[in-house]
Amino acid sequence: MKLTEFMTTKIEYVDSDATVYDVVEKMVDRRIRSLVVRDPKEKGGHGVITARDVVFKVLAKGIDPGRMKAEELASKPLFCIDKGASLADALQMMEQQNIARIFVCQEGYIAGVVSMMDIMWAVLILRARGEDVSR
Image 1 (tube, rainbow, N blue to C red):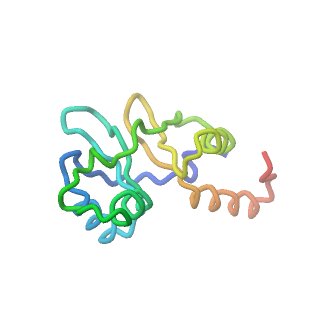
Image 2 (tube, rainbow, N blue to C red):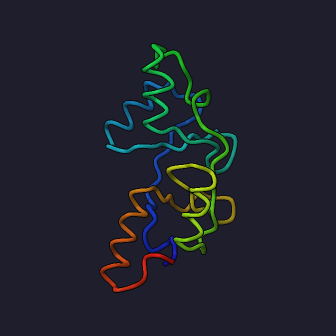
């Protein structure tokens, strides 16, 4: 199964100079778990912030989210995989890098993202099609 069959194509961004409070507002408002942090001077994204990052690296440590910039919290670099890659390729990279999402890139631009939930959705689709999910 190709990544393009189940990747999320609506990528949400935040500028690197936004505050973590801005990140929280956007995540809660859009009901999403991650944002790509982009530097307006560079093409594409250059980092990612997850809800886990916000909760464990900022809020749990008592850091004021209004005083911390997105670029300070962002995990870098983004882990990208080619748009033509398979589900198995994505799983292998996610396991090797111990990451919960991988960005699908084409010619230096982010075309989509695959999260653990997307992987589980893909497995259900494969099962419904009668295909082997162990490949």
